[in-house]
Structures are given as C-alpha cells and as structure tokens.
Picture (tube, rainbow, N blue to C red):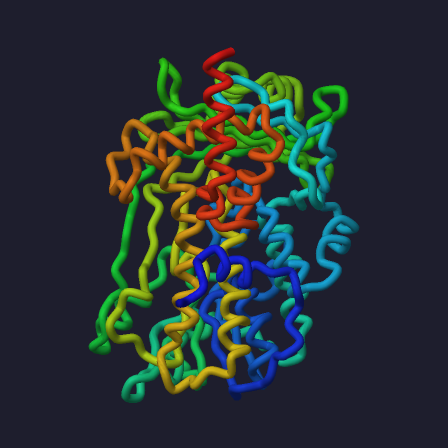
Amino acid sequence: MPPSSSRQFAEISTSLRPTDATVIMRRAVVLGGSMAGLLAARVLSDHADEVVIIERDGSEVGDEVRPGVPQGSQVHALLPAGQVQLERWFPGFTEEAVAAGAVLPRPERVQLHLNGARRHLPPPTGNPPLVTTRPFLEAMVRRRTMALDNIRFVHGRAEGLVFDGDRVVAARYLPMTGPDTPNAEPITEAADLVVDAMGRSSRLGDWLSENGWQRPPMRRMPIKLNYATALFARDEQVSDVDVVVSQTNAGNGRVARIGGINAVEGNRWIMLVAGYADDRPSRDTADFIARCRNDFPDAFGAIAEKGRMIGDVVTYHQADSRRRDFHELERLPAGLVVAGDAVASFNPVYGQGMTSATLHASGLSSYLRTNPDLQLPAREYFEKVRIVADAAWQVSTTADLGLPHVDGPYPPGYGFISWFGNRLLAATFSDPVLNQRLSAVTGMVAHPSSLVRPSTMVRTIRASLFSRAA
C-alpha cells in the first residue's frame, strides 16, 4: 500500500537537509527566474554539472518590483512551511534576512480578526514568521542561488521546447537586448531536464499540443479578487502593530473582505484591502482611506489616516484560482517537470504561492535523490507536486466556495467539509490545541487530512456543543 498523502506531505516538507544528493545529469534548464525557478535551480545544482536559468527580466534586478511579477507590489506572505524550506536550502537565510531588515513580528503585536471579533489566543508556538515584501525576499533568494558556481543566468524569453522521440532534449529562447527587446534569432539550449517555472501564463500547454502531446487538464475556480495596497512609514505614535489580518466572511449582512498589515523592511508598513466581484478597491487615495476606516479594524484606519503614505495606491485583480493536473496525463514526455504557479495558483489572500514553490522544489529534490531514469517521464515527481497542490487547493477553494458569487465546482462531501470547517474555525478561538492544529494546516506545515483525525473531530464537536450550551 502506498504511503498516505499526509505522510508523503510530511516527507516533502521536512526540514532535514539532504545528505545523499548525487550528480545525475550534465545540464538542466529552468524556464523562469522567479521564486519557483530559483528554488528549482538551487535543488538542481546538487544534481547537475550545470544549471541554466532563462528569465526575461534581467539578473541585475534588485529589490524593486520586477515587470514579470505585476503582483509583486502587493502584500505577500511566506507561510511557516516556506520559511522552513528556505532555511533548508539556504542555511542561515532567516538570520541574514533579519540583518538586512526583515521583520520577525512580536506575538503581542500580532492581531487576528474574524468577522469583526479579535482572536485573543496567542499565535501557535514555533519560530516567528519572517515578514518582508515580495521583491526583498525574492532578491535574497536570487542572490543566494546565483552565488552557486554551477548556476548560469541567461537574459532571454523562452520560446519553446525541442523534442526527440518521447523526451524533451532542449529549450529555445530569444536573447533579450533590452527590457522588452528580444533578438530575432532563437538559441537552443540542450538539456537533460527542463523545468517550466513560467507562472500562471505558462505556454507549456501550447508547446505540448504543437508537438503532438496532450495539454494537461486545467481546473479553474472563479474568485474575482480585487486588491489595493499602499506603503506607509512606520510610526509608533500612529500604531505599534507588526501584523494584522482581518477576514470577514459573507453572510448575516456581512460582505466578504480581507485586509492585512505587515511591518516590513525599510521601517515601513505594507497595507492591503481586498474585496470580491463588484467590490473593487481603487487607486484613489481617498477611497483607500475610507475603506480602511469603515471596513476594517482600528489599526487600518489609524495608519491610513494618520500615517505617511509612501508612493501611490497600487491595485491588482485575479480572476480565478487554477491548477494544471499533469499527473492525469496518459502520456508525458520525459525530460520535463513543472513547478510553481505553472502547476497551480490559488487565491493569493491565503499566502500559499511562494510556500508551494518551496515545497515543489523539495519534491524535486526527493525525486532526484532516487536516482531516476531521466529517459522516462517524471511521474513520481508529478505525484509529489499533486500532493502539495491538493493541500493548498483544498484549503483555499473550500473557503472560497463560501463566497456568494462562487458556484463551484464543489468537491465530494463539500456539505460536511463546510459544516465541520466552520465549527473547527469557531473552536480555535478558545481551544489552543485546535488552534495549533488548524494553524499547522493553513501554514502548510501539515496536510489537511490531519484535521479529520478522530481526536480533532471529537474535540471540535465537543467545543461546538459546549458553545451552544453556553
């Protein structure tokens, strides 16, 4: 009997550093130099003589928002599992990040609000989360990755794959002579393994179809999420918060909204307000301030009205969550794996994107350390990616199905899942054990299946009954 998803997830998300890595290929090519591509390259550096990263944004990009990551200016969260994996692949990462200005929030300065009520239980025990902007974190990962001797960066735009029989043998790209100026003549880069880390807009499905292969099935859930984010100078006279998260669920006259405040590098706050469907925060400063004052806890209004805004309000829209199920394909070419948002991207308010990318990299390491035959499809890798994608998808889409404008697709047993999930969430306000267990799942430290253990279910139902009696 194969190991359970929970056990396989635990093996992928381990903090133990590999000691059994061997070189099994001459060259690996990674398409995309964002978080998923950089982490894949780091793992591949243990198994390839040479790793080539092909990225259309130049390697000289610093801590600013990259053109290829238009959502990079928005609030990003590195979940606890992601921090564990960054430390696993880049020892000393957290200490280095803090020395460069990243924030480790103090528990007494963290606020969590649900439907207007503040959660007063302390945050679960463990290392405090690392809080930064996305550009700061990615720049650190890029510097650590590119410091490795066998990784080479190429400024270019990926244009396709080269097949030989049943396997991918090379990738084609157009060299970039400027920020948006590719050369006319493509270059072919031979590879024993190609990694697609091109994000949500990956063209891999087109490339496979053009060469006689199946497109991976795609699942979508329309969420119609609308963001607005602004930066503020931190000021203790205005507020002493490090992190605030506010979530309002639809129902009982409430409108579904999400808000977040993070203290980040540069002695700043980054503050986000988000709505769904026709509830659209705008770039207008007055609208942003009014939303902070009227729709969110006091810290939002205090910072928006009394703080000094740095720059302009920036907006972003994401229409759907989506995943490409490569594990369902009957035929897969050898020499190809996929990572990051090119596999699955979720409602970003749950902060699963960067952490999923770190776990995909660890799944790649687990696969390559079995010394696989690279002449065969990497099905074992895609099975590991499925387990990670399932974990994130289950958490985010179960919550999103509660939005009034989302009408499916509903998973089997959704009625019970929703009923139990609501009671579990309510119980975490007063039960520290359940709070710890749910936080492990939402932080991607544990697989969601861990929440259906008998002890958790009994404890949740008992808490629900006592709450009604009271």
